[in-house]
Structures are given as structure tokens and as C-alpha cells.
Amino acid sequence: MPRPLIFLDDGKMGRNERDDTLEKFRTSSRYNVALVSLMAGSTGLNLTAANNVVLMDLWWNPALEDQAFNRAHRYGQKKEVFIYKLVIPGTIEERIQALQAQKRDLASNALTGHELGKKLGMSLEEFLRLFDREHTQSVGSVVSASRPMIYLDIRKGSPVPFSRFLH
Image 1 (spheres, helix red, strand yellow):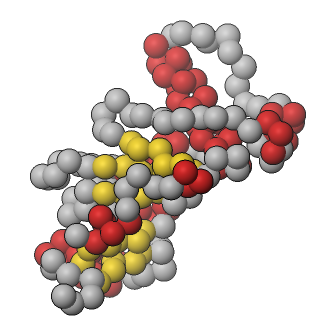
Image 2 (tube, helix red, strand yellow):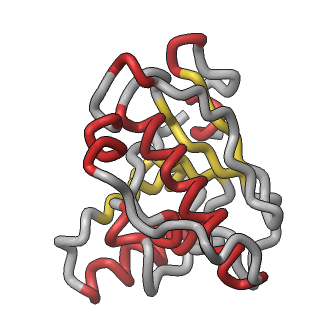
């Protein structure tokens, strides 16, 4: 079996090279993996040839993650899309995920008019708690109503072997 090819976009690729490589990813069965940085993949990219999205690092703004996820989950997608967020329990990533959940709630409440008296922003103590190992929060899964998202606990082992993404 020939070795799979990887589409890599870290944001440094020129537009023509990116478009040519992306077309090969869409049309060649040898391209099984696309590695795209969050900022490069959050806008102007159509990845409907992909149906497994793995987010390796979290962003402060959950809307940027949603935009990146939507590169695969959009009109023209013929397969079910699976989104995986890799979060190591007890780390700043887990606390950022909790902060993202709070931001999503705040945005939802602003749209519906609920809890408008809630404070915006975070105190210095809350910010410092992001880096404090003693205040680890167990967040669990953040699930979007429009698509499945699977929270993987690295310490317990991934329930989905990486080899699944190569087939």
C-alpha cells in the first residue's frame, strides 16, 4: 500500500500553491490527512473532502474554532462529520475549555435576553486560576447542537485510534 500523502497548511503557503494542493486533497485517494493550523483553517477554506476534524490546541475564542470546524461541516459534505478536541485533564487547556463554555453561555444568554445582569470579562483571580493546578475543573464534553463533538481524555487513552484517520 502506498504511503498516504498529507496536506499541510500552516498559513505560510501562497494562495495558488494552497489551492493546487487542496484540489489534490479533494481528488486523490492518497491524501488521507490534512494538517491545518487553526488560524489558517478558520476562514476561506473548503474541506468537505474531510470528515474527521481533530483540534490539537484550543483558542480563547470558541467562534474561531467553530469556523475551523465548519470548513469540513458545510454544504456539499456527503459524509457525517466527527469533531475531536484533544484536551489533557488538569492542564490550562481544560480550564480554557471551561472558559469557552462560559463564553458560549454568555453569548446564548445575550441573544435570548436571559441573565443580562451577569458580569462580563474575568477578574485577576479568575485569570490566575487558569494557571493554578489546584483549581482544576472537570469539564467533560462541550457538545454543539448542530454536530457531534467528542472529548478525548489523553490520560485514559483515546477511544478512537489514530489509524482510523488514515483509512
